[in-house]
Length: 160
Image 1 (tube, rainbow, N blue to C red):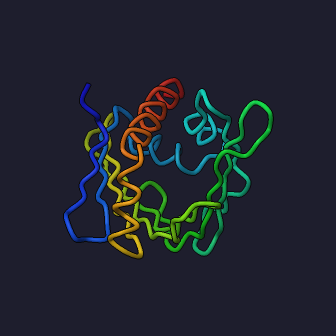
Image 2: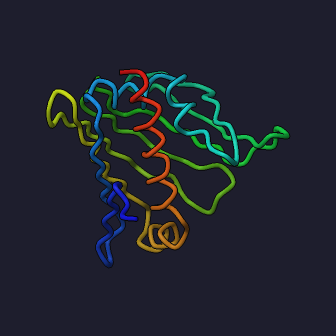
């Protein structure tokens, strides 16, 4: 099955470009990224439950979440700082994963209205090095992101 979330990585560059179209108004796509209850729903999966630890939706505000298994063991945690926050348009943030070999990365998220009922998420992620970016791409990153975006579509469609 073809992935709806497209990940583009040019050889020798230290960034990724990710695009995904959603059958959601841009307002709801943006809301899925900034409302803790919605974020927790689409980021949770069969391996664990995601909990937002902090989410200060403003310039220089911090954010963080963790995913835990059924026994309460932390499977994954990440956080960062917002550098730009324009409702329903863009978010620029740092993204740092705890207990991983990856350095902090810079993410530019742009929320684009296509029609009243469809939108596109454009992400540009900059890594410290080509090697770190390539290391991430060797993991099931693209498949996991596509699955998360599929859950986002499913969860937020019920909000419409």
